[in-house]
Length: 337
Image (cartoon, rainbow, N blue to C red; front, side, top):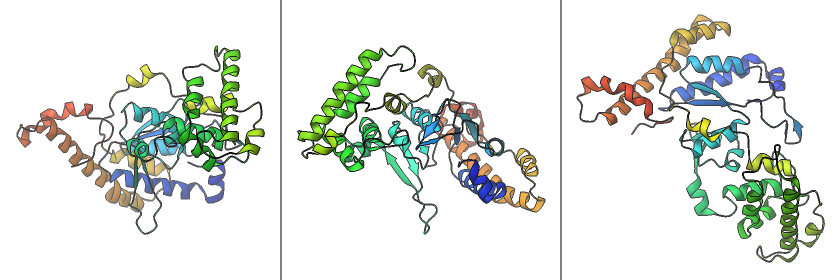
């Protein structure tokens, strides 16, 4: 969701209409949808701009409509992308659907993105970590992507001046600098008891290695002497690197204790009540129910039958209802086969 200014530019009704169309698309998909919102501990500075910690003004309305449609809404401790990536790594969700590439930096394994193809709005792109590593195990590894964000520039910092993506990716592909950087910060509480002397010593040694690699091109194969000489003594910024390597996602125990999200059905009465608060006319509400809500109800009924049939393949169809209570353990996203 965009910031507050987007509402002022195009209006609440237009933004709600766009969100309604997106939710309608989700209703037609045979999957259990979990919507994750940014939390109170998200970074306050992103892309060089201060970020409002307060929720977007449309968030309450979006949550209310989403819950009525049968979707689960969750608030992340920090950034939603980091939390989704962590849930994905732990297989609490099978796929992450987002246009934000940060989810790769945070270690997501299976990501669905929309290429925004005007000729085919239903087209999607599926990225799998295994395929990415097979293509480029250096630059496209989680550590490599973190290194590229820190050195080449990303959401939390501008990186080194005159060192863009190409040079950063080359270093990530051919050197051990990415893994060394992540090792320095991993399992370190930067705001608790970080042992600053040890941290600064480690970062200084890492920076010297980066300078040598840029100056002599020992592993990357090309020299960037002027770039090596321009690296400031303050690089890399510890807070910037920590945001990528140790994002706020909550404890592992808390996430592992999360239940498997069940398939939920849309609530037509609840949808109608929410639509009335939006000021929708009855004709529009009836059209939304007929074209989207009831379609979603049917899709989820077929999905539930499909899941139940796997659990009770040898049980006559009439008795498949007996297996319904067991379907809650099937995981957050299921596709019909």
